View 1 (cartoon, helix red, strand yellow):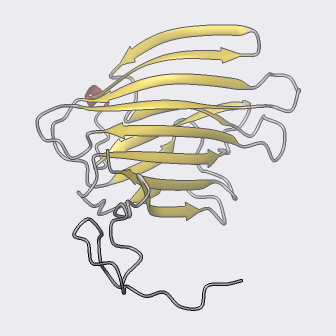
View 2 (cartoon, one colour):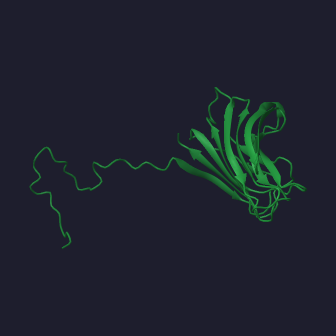
View 3 (tube, one colour):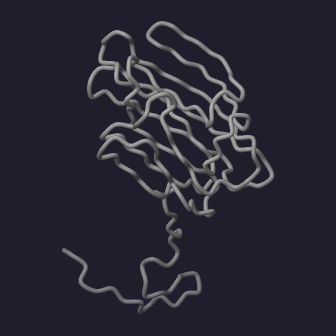
Length: 206
């Protein structure tokens, strides 16, 4: 038998919480830790992606990319993230661990590229319709007392073709204490990101 009526009559003891609302006493709703800021889906070859006017209401940022470039003659490419459109090579350094097929490599470079280097997306030489996925955390992006660290994980499967796919873990440093208010993303070697590439920026409450 279903409940048809409830009454507060008889609840006279001070030990009971008396209210017309079933929500009283429940924990407050806490929104998800990740909040979407903007998603950009590529419908035709595009040379650069820009996230402008990033709100200063989060602790960290996360960039999620499903991408492929038009780099000719190679199955491999990467992309660069330029904080506040800063393209000064000397302001970027990175470390990485990478595996291509059965070949592992590791290394570091200072001041080589005009942005934070994020591996790995396919180039035009990869199997058709293969895209690479990467996730990059941009830590303490609005903190004006420290340089900015980026932490990335990415790779792709070349569908058992040769050359093999790739997996990558790395970190970058933007040597600047300015708060990050915008991001510009470009292929490292290719000219364009190709159709169906996707870029999604999230804020992390921390």
